[in-house]
Structures are given as C-alpha cells and as structure tokens.
Amino acid sequence: MKRCTSCKIDKPFEDFRRQSKTKDGYKYRCKACDNSAAREYYQRKKKKIIENALEWQKNNPDKVKEYKKRYYSKDN
Ligand SMILES: [Zn+2]
Image (cartoon, rainbow, N blue to C red; front, side):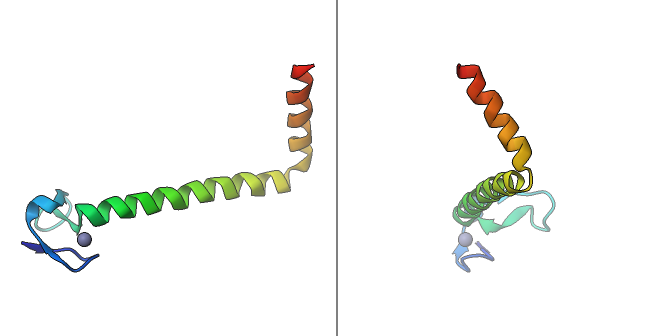
C-alpha cells in the first residue's frame, strides 16, 4: 500500500503509475488524482492559450486588421 499525497488515501501500488524518478518507483499521486490533475492542467493551459491569443490581438490590432482583411478578401 502507498499513500497518495494528493487525496491522502492508502491505495495499492496498482493504483499508482510507475515513475523511475521517485524512490519507490511510483508516482506520489494515485492514478485518479493524476488524471484529474492532467485534466486541470489541460484546462488551465487551454485557458492560457486563449488568453495569450486575445492578448496578442489586443497588442497587435494592425496585424489582426490585416489578417481579417486578407481573410475576407479571399471570400470575395
Ligand atoms: Zn489520490
């Protein structure tokens, strides 16, 4: 058994993914916590990517205008 550092529940080793970097060869977090952490990370990253894009558009209005002009002119 191994205690997950995230949910603090004792779980069998099968519930942990292997990781060579750690002392016992298993990750500190159980698979369930690992999955939710990965999901959260993805959500955060996704949000960040959108934020960055909006930030870029705000800082580069000329390029956005240029891009839109090109995009719309393609349709005509
Ligand atoms: Zn856990």
